[in-house]
Image (cartoon, rainbow, N blue to C red; front, side, top):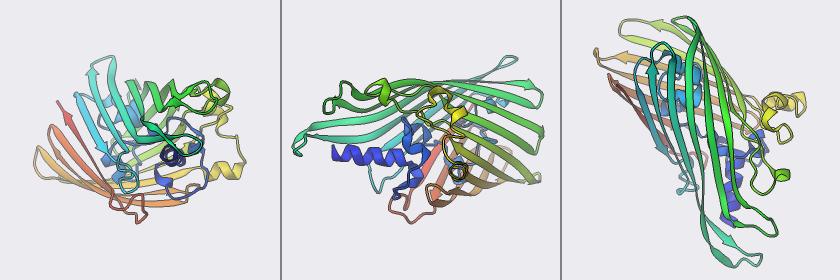
Length: 346
């Protein structure tokens, strides 16, 4: 199962840590596919998005943003995270939101990630066949206003990961696990130009593949985000945003990793785990129904030893949006990697 092991190593280290053997908190977690962020607009701004999330991707980034939706919205994306290393690994995401005046707004989302075809071998290296690994998450989201300028949101997710459908060695179970998780978000907008938001993602019990003693934590994480509009005219607008991201998986903490994950290592290591993301978007209005945007961002991941500049652009036409992002990185994993996503409003 050599390819399976290399694929799982990649997934455990994390999307932006390919090529480094340093252990990160995410490397202890199951269902790492839940960290594959779906929006090309967000990735163009360094994935600093929890204080924006003004499309159907709010079901992933921050369900509290759903409270401000007044139209139905659809968002879709399909991409290959590391096509230069493993072209059969891909991730797809689809979401739909529906406003209900007076009671809040609902959202539905589905993420499906193919982890590629794996080859099973015995201890002597003889081929025993092939199998496919995948992960899937199905979510229902709700967002509403607590106060005029303060909203909250919740997402409940069913999570399934099938790493291997074959028995390994003397283990009794197979490499498939199922769990559930929740996201909890808040968004405060004291003015039209400033937003403060926070979200706690993937809170749930450990995922069991073989037995309870070997269960792995979900990739719980906490993000604090700020978005600010320093410049705005009738024709153009500049938006700047930043996120501070802290991974929280803790094998011993289980469901309560969101609490224990802050102190299961030395203070120095806990601080080093934090990722910093910053992004900017300049949008220019072409007409009453259309606009285009230029974007740039930067992601600093200290424990994964990666600094990643990003760029992209977007097109908007009344009822539809199209976004593209590009990772400015010369590593073997992310060289010439583009991401596309689209959305509809009606």
